[in-house]
Amino acid sequence: MSGRVLIYDGDTARLGRLAQAVTLAGGEPFEVSSAAAAVRAAASCELVLLAGEEGIGALAAISAAHPTLPRITIVGPVNAADAERLVIAIRGALVHHRPSAPDFETLTRDRLTGAIGWHYFRLRLVEELDRAARYNRALSLLLVDLDDLRGLNDRLGRAAGDFALAQVATALISGARSVDFVGRWAGGAFALLLPETAVGAAYGLAERLRADLAARRLPAPPQLLHPSRPLRVTMSCGVASLYKDGTAHAGTLVARADHALWRAKLGGRNRSIVD
Image (tube, rainbow, N blue to C red):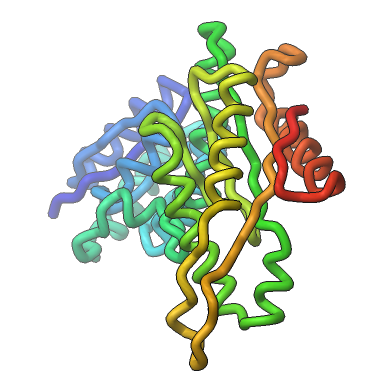
């Protein structure tokens, strides 16, 4: 019996005991050092061991990306008796191997739009924010929301609204840089994470994407039974950058971008506002 077992734990001593238990259980330990790496590596593993604050913190994202992957979570220390029980639990979990896993891109993408899924985007946000703060680098966040998506759903049906969302996501992904992250946020909203980007450049990108969408005519949704004219969709954008107030907290940056988005909506929609 063999199987690759992912281990994510910030406690170095306990990490070693977990790796030893995996080996005794007949598995192959694979250690990672970040939550994003854990989500990525889990696609090729048979079991996940999550321990301590760091490991448990990644549980939601791993569960969302890999809902059928067996998981064992450990909060406290691992003594000799615990280690014996852990070996038995690992061995039992490895008895039933999973079928070949989908590739990483498939697991972390939103199925409707092709943008990065919410859970993985949040992980990238935290990691990029930490990197930018540590090395004194620029970082910006855009929150964009389709204007009157509810009205589109009411007029043409939810299938038409979903079609418009997918078309807008394609436009955002193609319009962003290769180093940027385009994620599905909620409802008709998307988020763009822009590493190495100060507020001026972030606003410029937001305006370019907004203007391109406003000038674009989306094809008629193929789900409609009757012919329809091409759709015109606009979006509002909220822009926030890392060093306006020196914060390095993801929640604060998101709140500022969201507040700017709210001001754009309140100001008449189809515009970009900087916090």
